[in-house]
Amino acid sequence: MSPGRTSVVASLEEAVARIPDGATVGLGGAVTAGHPMALVRALARRGVRDLTVVGPVAGIEVDLLIAAGCVARVVGSYVGVESAGAVGPVFRRAAQDGTVEVVDLDEAHVVAGLRAAGQGLPFLPWRGGVGTAYPELNPALVEFDDPVRGEPLLAVPALELDHALIYSEVADAVGNAQPVGTGHMDALLGAAAKHVVLQADRIVSTDEIRRAPEKTLYWRDTTVVRAPFGTHPYSNGWMTADMEHLRAFVKAGREGGAALEAYMSQYVAGAGDHDAYLEAVGIRRIASLLI
Amino acid sequence: MSDVTTNELFAILLARDLRPEDRTIMVGANMPMARAAAVLANLTTHPDARILIGLGVHGLGDGGDPPGVYPFVFDPRSLVGEALMWQGRVFDDMSRPDVFFVGGLQMDRRGNINLFGIRDGEGGWRMRGPGSLALATMSTSCRGYYIVMPSHDPRTFVERVDLISALGDRAERERLGLPGGGIRLILSPLGVFGVDEDGEVRVRSLHEGVSAGDVRAATGWPIEVGDDVPVTAAPTADELRTLRERVDVHGTLA
Image 1 (cartoon, rainbow over the protein chains, first blue to last red):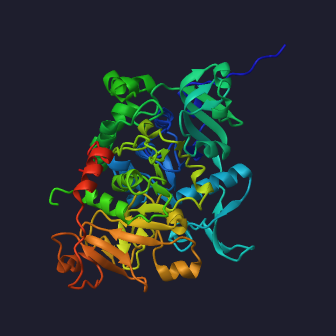
Image 2: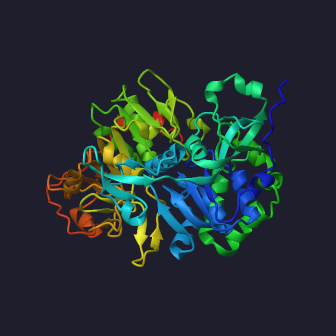
């Protein structure tokens, strides 16, 4: 008889407890969709320090972690809030103050770097970025003449992650993910990471997963956490982004000081766990976002 | 056309300039005027094109429902269409995107774009931008791209950008063997610009009510603006009606 399978389900707090100071952490999602915000807030509450954060096309998850003092370095192609804010406000100030190092990559460089890490390669070549400021801003990107056709290319070094924090609407207890719609760059983030923390709205039986195997993503070492509405204020396949909340964050972030502290106190530090966060946002607001 | 907003004008000018052979039109984050242009063209002049907007891939030539031109497009309302966008796969077919749209903090007289930010001269940032998304990759490979500058003043139209996100300079592109077709048009609130054979950015038309002197004063290099520069052709009633009633139904461009 089969000994059965081992559940990898943990609480948000247990999952982020595995992430030490100085870790390199990838954050999933893109622009205003699918960021694992409940995990990000739990990580910010934990007060981990000196993280290198890899956000392919990032939003306020980077601002929140910077505001909580967790970040030494930001790697990615964008930190912004779409039409609510051209630049992540806390990110911008930290970059200008020099308190956070910015490592610029083109969106396709992030893909190449994650893929190189997943494939166990030191780098992958890419053409986009030749003739731009990328090699000057990010000396890890090395221009070389390709040995086949002799054309100038960039070597994009492997983006090896210690942990990838990824969101999927649906998961099961053994680490299968079935995102609704697109999964952004998340499959590659997981492949580049030693350990994946998968945040889901619903944890279903593996029999339910088996009904649509073509939708499944999985990685070698995964921890699953349940956090309903846990992408808020960002969207998922069932919920739109909370524009009002994002605009309020951008306003507080631009103002900084007491205004930003008040936001962090109400929604991150003061909201001691994810349920308290949802209470702070309010059921009326959450319900209004569901499609 | 006094009641036409700048973003509405941009959308119509972009849609008009697309070429008959454009088959795949890709739009990135925070460019609602370019989203509108893609949908407008797909509904009118380009029924065989596929348009990539937010998370969805759409072909509207057979009567498919137009995606909304929402302020926030990366959300479940854009999980519609005939295919979906996966950021991890979209760069696997670089022969595909014909057209892309680029915005910037600065543009220079050679058509180079900066979306990184302004350096402080000591290795740090005087003014940090959001980062350059996929500008370098798309401007390198796509058959042609459009630059949309939301403001036109000596700080945004500069002699030389601090940092290059998208290499517009024709001579440099040729020297490096970049495969794409480069800049098609540059739109600003003052006029329409293009890149001449010698690689210089020059005015093509001035929007109604804008003078040559306005453009010279707002441009950070000694730009030549002749007295015979035409006025930008105003949106037609048909174009505006389609844009407002079928494309921008939420008034995002208003």
